[in-house]
Length: 629
Image (cartoon, rainbow, N blue to C red; front, top):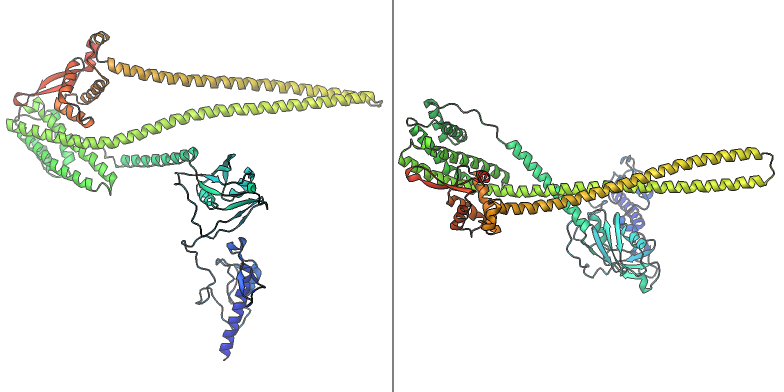
């Protein structure tokens, strides 16, 4: 029975303490008109933050229960509280985690609708919209948006009232107000725009007036501003530059070291290299040795069969490299950087194999092979060149994108330097103007003081004082000092004006230099275009008959010249057309050959090979033709 009384006593005290606390927090008032004397909650805007209205009373009630005094959010009110020192003896201490007693309220779920309340400002009042109405419609948010459009303002609303309402959302940088009851507000950060959108749909009333000109319904929406877009693009470009720098550093770190020196040819070394060519892990080292031996001229009738077997072993790796390339393509999405590195390695090996074929096709090594061996080597060479060109085009596409990005960065740097120079000159001019203004104001002040001294001197002369002579001397000394100071100020003022004029002249000279540079750039571009069309023939022949009939043919001449300059041993017309067809499918072999035959001082056709391997090759001879013409 005693145990039941203790429990009843504890429950009554707990209910009374918690009831008084929630009454203070939620401001519960009695309704005099209700029959059953029921209670209702009157929650104003200040109570929604759930502060402890009387922390001392709450701490005392919790202390009496033997509990650690906690706020409504779970923060300790008394940090040095000892739960064993409770005023109610015989009752064990209570903890907030006991079942049936939830001191800390559960978190608010995100799906719960936000209840908008009345907002009181100094000059106006904001009334919330009807909660049953749908939320106001907004446009799509622009990237990096920091500016909002505010419509529905009262006709008598001023800029000060707008600042008073929206400065609660965050720092305001600029306001552009229109005469048609709307304005644009630019905030310092992007998240402040979301706070401003919360006020969309509120009814605004200036003071206590109900006049139509003093009321309005706010409509807040995203606004598209060039400043916001420019800052967002600058941030994106900075992130892209950091990513490119990181990739470049990774490539430099993964770059392989220089190869060791190649040993001289011997039968023993030849057998070692032949074994290494069969091993995939040692193929790159072995093929480099094979290439060096062929270029040194180690191929002769006695060693021709050994070299042919090594070339055959090198050709056996073509299929392996193709398979490796296919596997790397499958893994490209998962490891793009790894794929790029592997592709470059494969291309190097293809270049080495093709270089082996070209070295073996030279006359000093080619004559020692049989016809069947020559035929196999030529077929292998064509196959390897086709596969190498495909891989080279893929890698060149990636590098082309990187070069375009680098050119964008250089253009940005040049514009930034010009802007900094102009801003520095403008800031210097403004500083000099401010100094001139301050000197003028000092001159006016000194003149006023001189006039006052003169007036005082005149009054002193009129009066009959015994100390007239002393006062006159003091006044004369003061006037002399003021005049000297005025002369110094005037000299400084003239110096500042001269400096200002000099800076203005420098600014004009800089602007003229910039205009001259732009004109020179335009003239250079026009001259380069004219020179590219007229460089293939002397002016006498151009007047008679120009071999380049259109701008398209001039572009083809430039591309073919660049291509043949990279291939000093020449290239066949089929190889040239296969390269041009990747740029434009409409280019035909006959058109290219007729164009090259017309330009005899730029391109020259030669016959290479012996016997059945005779082949017509076109070479670039523009440097020699320039001397002849």
